[in-house]
Image 1 (cartoon, one colour):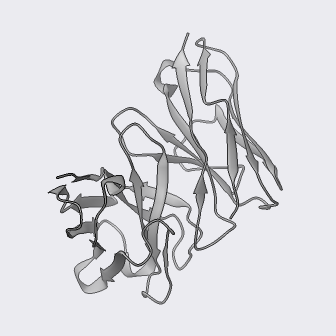
Image 2 (cartoon, rainbow over the protein chains, first blue to last red):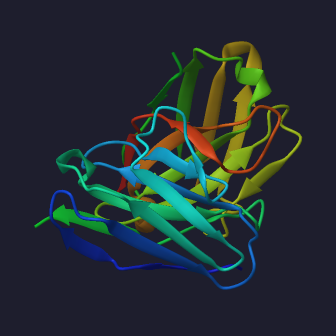
Length: 108
Length: 122
C-alpha cells in the first residue's frame, strides 16, 4: 500500500503569513493527490484536486503543486477563517486510498 | 444544490449490526460513484468503502472487508452501508461523499454530508 507522510502535524502562524504543508508518497503517484480542509465540527471540503487544480469557489490564496512523490499545499496569506485541519489524500492506488495524518493549523 | 444526508447511526453493542443510509439530492445520483469515509473521535479521515455509479465496482478498506457491505438504490437516490460484527474500533463519525466527476472513480470527493455518529460500546 502507498503511505502518505504529511508534515507538519501542527502549525501556528500569523495572519498574513505564507503557510506551507507537505505530503510525501511512498511511491510515485503521478498527480493523483487532493487536499481537503476540515474546520472544527464540520465535514471536510475539497480545496485542490489533481495536485494543483483549485476547486470551484475556493479562494485563490490556496494552491497546490508537485508530482511523483512530493507535494506542497500553500496558503499565500493566512486568513483567520483558514483555521482548520488540512489533509492530503492520494488516489493512485485504487480502490484503496490513503489520507495523510492531517495538519492542524492555528493562528499565532 | 447538492445535499447528502446521512442517517442510521447510534449506540450499538459490540458484535451487533447497524445500517447507515445517505439520502442524496441536487444531482443525478446514478451518474456518480459514492463513498463512505469515517473519522474516529479526535482522529483523522479513513476511507471505508466506495461503489461505482452502476454498482459494477465496489471496494472496501481492509479494516472492514468481510464485515461491511456497501450498496445503492439509484431509484431512491440512496446509498447504504450495512455494518455487521461491529467492534469498538468502528466507533466514528461516518460521512457519505460524492465523487467530483461523473462516471469516474477517482476518489476526488467533491461533496460530503455532515455525518452520522456510530458508537460501539457495551
